[in-house]
Image 1 (cartoon, rainbow, N blue to C red):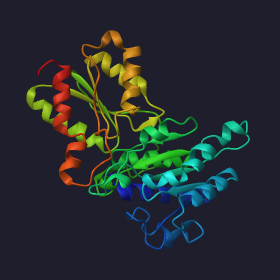
Image 2: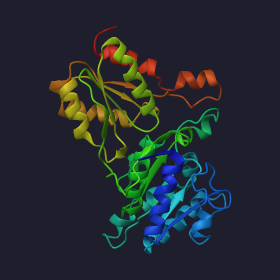
Image 3: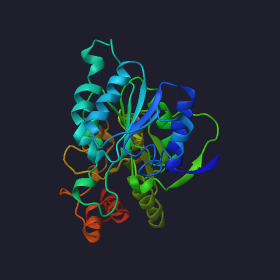
Length: 326
């Protein structure tokens, strides 16, 4: 094992897959000469050259379309969005082409492409640069949507995503690129669609993904002081969702709190709550609760950002509510 930053783990994944398969290439804004907007691709131009690490104009619709065409013709592109907020410019290509070509062609074409970059809030960036898009893309059949929470998962999941024959939306966080964690030195892959129990517990199940896992784990740590033993599940991907791991946990703890950054309506948390009440209703001792972002565009002011985002205190309050301790 070795300690890597989140950005370094992503870079290792891309480097290893590009060395392994000459069809893999990286394309996006500032990925080459500038070494990446967040230095994820640092040094990759020097190793792989300008034919495989490609700077683009500020034209997400254009370079996404080029990537999809390249994938249909046998290459395996990695398309970096500087932020998924900018992917809205390219969403027609992602949804109407990348996600649907296999079905529309009766399997004659596959689109082995990865769209990756940061999603969600990242400090004082205001409404147009702070939206969480996980549930948007998870809504679309034909896409897989991955949201890792730590460097080891990020590397293993990105390697799997690059090898996948279907389009994968790979969502990161600007606020996590500097996070450090232990990463295996040997070759490994993590399957998409398999959740991970980050902390075992008996009293309540807390489910989350991405950077909100920090909130969930911090809340679980604080709850121990009140003799509440929470089980914390990291979904890791939100399409497909590993419902079985969540349901089996609820059958043990009988309570569920879901933590998600996005707006409340039509969220991943809503889908999980539906599935649990459908398949594990008899095991629930309390209503499922969600801890969500505010139902407003994210403000700029730090005080309002703090009020908008889920935090450990709100999770602790929800846990105590489902345990009837408030």
